[in-house]
Every structure is written in structure tokens, then in C-alpha cells.
Length: 373
Length: 259
Image (cartoon, rainbow over all chains, first blue to last red; front, side):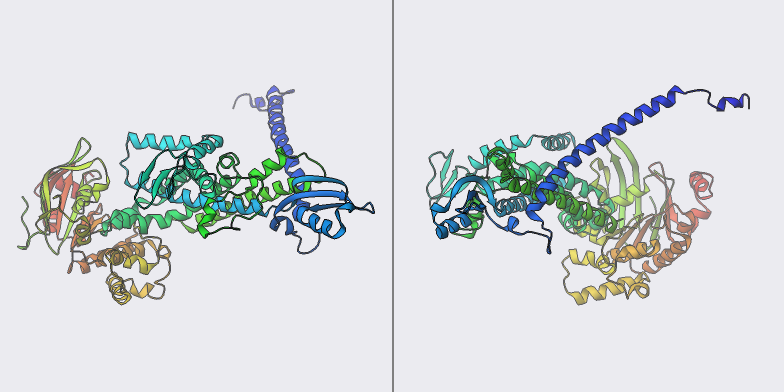
């Protein structure tokens, strides 16, 4: 070898300086983002956790999760002690002590009690929407990947579905409002005045007058929003099932549908369900699609209370966590008395989403280790 | 035209078959009889169309959108299998298939063998039990797996899995079994077991086997067909093909000078 001393570096090397700078800038940016995220989550946890957690066993204060939302009354009593009571307790207190005993009263909307209504509403909305989306999504995925003749048209359909996943959620909200709230068909004895088209069936009317703002309209809107993701994920899961299974089944004289039902779907289902859990988190978290289609800021009853028949639940309006958080943040002034409700709601909501995501990751890992071929 | 070694009606008759993938013809004017209750081996270099021909017999090629028969006919038991009123499911019940890569379902050993019977509507668990035991005995797996019928088929070795696939295929009582390089991914010992099984199965089934293993063809087949570039070059009794072929290309191939 000639000139082996070239291998030894002389003086300060510019390349090395450059490398160091690039590393410092990239690292700084990354840690900056992490720090900001930690600050936000830290603040939410710090201020929100006390609404739900306590220092003694069993460490969870269930009141916040199980009580209905009420107006918070803050006042002094005759002795000068400051009280802050949710509406029902306040009225009981006034009943006992007399309204003369209340001084310097202030009220804060939505800030007393708990968030049972929004939790129940979000749970119902999410379950219903995921059920609808899975039904339509899996059906569409089966058609697209197992039945449809693969060509340019199906490619375009696929592209359209992918693009649909990127449509802003407020657009889905308006779509849901226009289609489900105002125009979806119902059977009714007397069509409403704003019915777009009413078809007489003799004993009843088939009227395109919409489902009004209701659980079913909101769930349908959310289902539309997550449908593209479900279809794409389901198709991926179906494609992951080896062709050999299909050929073996067909070669034994099974029909196409038998093959799909017994040899493809059972092995694709775990994958489909896993990716659906992530959609579940998205459906639970969106505000825009439910604003016009189902959500209300205040409701005295839980969704299933005060119904004349069990199916009435689909026609009720409900509170929902994301919309509740929006209400708390945008419609009432922040003060020391509202913080519990505000931060508490966000904390509970974050924990729910966190739980969904963790569940999806655990599920995915388990499925991956279990289904190998 | 190849003479039929036995005088029985051929199980499968191929008449001047032409077959295309898209615009490319991959089988040119192939005529061949597959005799009943015998083993017919298809040999030839890769891409010569032997697997394609095999996959025509149960019309599993229908799955490939560009694949189509452009001329001639295939008759199974005298019935043209491209006629529009053909019961495709029944054809595939009667003409079973074993694939190159063993492909048991990720189900239990029992459920794998019972699969075919179940999709054809058999619900009686006694019938299923008997049939599963019989099929597993035929493929000489019964003693190995009788205590773990409910455990996953994936726990078996490669050779055992392939024999399980054969058991699964014979469970529906086919007349013909098509085998697409069933031993190409197996070790010599497992291959030997499958070959022994073939000779056993010959009593009850017509077998067509595609193989790259010339020794295997000469060991277990009664009739051998040599394909080259989509043409059937020569077909005849196995002993004759391997010792006194009439075509020079056949001789070159079986002696190992190409392919």
C-alpha cells in the first residue's frame, strides 16, 4: 500500500463539524417536539387526574364517571363558608337551609356532577358506527378482492376509496347532515312537510324526510367517515390469506362463497378486527361529524332513559365526549371551578383513546404470533 | 395419438387441446389419454406447460383471468368439461388435486380432513369420524396423529403435512387425483413415503403426477408423457420412455443432457 499515512486525519476536519451540526439540529427539533407534547399531556394529567383519581384505595373516584352533568352553584352560606355544589345537591341544600342563606351565588354551566352522559353517548355512537362500518366495509372488501374482475375500473374505485379516507371530517359532518338528518328514508304514517319524496304504500308512507338529529344519523355519519379505512384494511387482511388456501378449498369442490366463508374470512378476521380498533379510536374522537347529526350540549337523561320503546334509543340525541369538551372549552369561561370538569373530561377522553390504541397494538401482536403460515 | 395401455375407457381424454394465457399460446395441439387406475407422470423442463395442462383437468385455471382454452376439448369420463351446464363443484369433487406446496388450512388435523365432507353437507359426526380415520390410515398418518387430531395441522412436519393434504383430497372420494409436483419440497425420506402411498392409491384412484424428478417418474408411474415448449413430444409406457424413447429430444431429456 502506498501512502498509508493518509489514513490518519490531520487538523480539524470540516466534515466532522458538519456532521455534528446536522445531528444537533435534528436532535434538537425532535426533542423540542417531544417536550411540547409532554408539557401538554403533563398539564392535562396534572389538572385532570384529580377529577378521577384519589390518593386512597381504590384510587378511582367513580363519581365523575357515573354522575350526570349539572350546573355548578358556588355560594357562601350565612357563616361565610364557601360551598360549590352541583344543581341537585344545591337545590336540596336550599330546601333545607332556605334561599335566604345563599350569598354571593355564581353558577357555572356544565361544570358540576360528572360526565356519565357524554361517556355513554360516545360508547353508543362508537359501537353502532363500528358495527355499521364493519358490515358494509367487510362486504365491500370481499367484493373488491375476491369477486370483482381486477381491471382499470376497480383500480379507480380503490383509488377513490383511498382518497375518501383523506376527506376532512367536517365534510363528512355536512354530508351526514344533508343525507341522514334531512333526506334518509323512513316509514311513517304521516309524512312531514319537508319530506323530499313520499311514496304511499297503502298502510304506511315511505318518506324521504331524514332521521333528524339522532343516534342513528350520527353513527351512520361516523361509519361513512371510517368506512374507507375499514375497507382498505380489510382488503389487506384478505390479501394476506395465502392463495393456496383458496385453491385447496376450490379444488375440493367448494363454491366461491363457501371458500370465502370457511377458508378466507376466519383467517382474515383477526387482522380486520385489529385495524378496526384504530378506526374505533378515530370514530370516538371526532367532533365535526357529530356536531350536526347527533350531539347535544346538555341532556338530563342518559341515552336509554325515558324511552317509550327500546328502539327509541336510535332516535335520541346524545351527548358525546368530544363535543362535551368542545362545549366546556368554547362556551363557558374558564375559572378555578370549571377546571375540574374541563381538564377531567379531556383526561378521561385521552385515557380512553390511549386504551383503544394499546388494545389494538396488543391485539395485533397476539394475532401476528398466532397466525403464521 | 397415444395408444391406451389398458382397454378401459380413459379417465381423462385430451383432444387437440390449445390453451392461451392472454395472447400467448402455451399448449399447442395436445392429445393424450389418461388411463383409468394408473399413474401417469408428466415430465419436462420448467415452463413446458405440464402444470398448466394438469390445472385444466379440474378447471382451477378458471381463477386466472387471462387463461382460456382456445381449441380442442378435455373429456372427463366422456363429458366435455367446458360445456356450460357442467357442475363445476361436482367436477372438482371427482377430480381432486394436491398442490406443490403443502397447504393445510390453519385448522386442526381433523378439521382439515373433514373439510371437504363438511362443505358437501356431511354433518353426521360418526360418518365424519370414520372417514377421517380411514383417510388418515390410507396415508399412514393415523398412528402418528390419532392422539392429537384436535391440534393444529401446522405442528406436523412437511412430509406429514403433504400426506395430510392427500388425505384431505381423498376424503371426498374423488376418481382422479391430480398432483402438481407433490414432492418437490420434501426430503428424500418423505418423498419415498409419498411414493409408496401413490402405489397404494393406484388401486382405487387414477393419478396424474407432474414431477421434475425423473427417477420418481420412472419409479412409480405406469405411463409417462414428455412435454417440451408446450408440445407433447412423446407419451408411452414408462419403461419404454426411459429406455427406448422414439424421439431424440425425449432421449436427451431423460438421459440428462438438457432440462
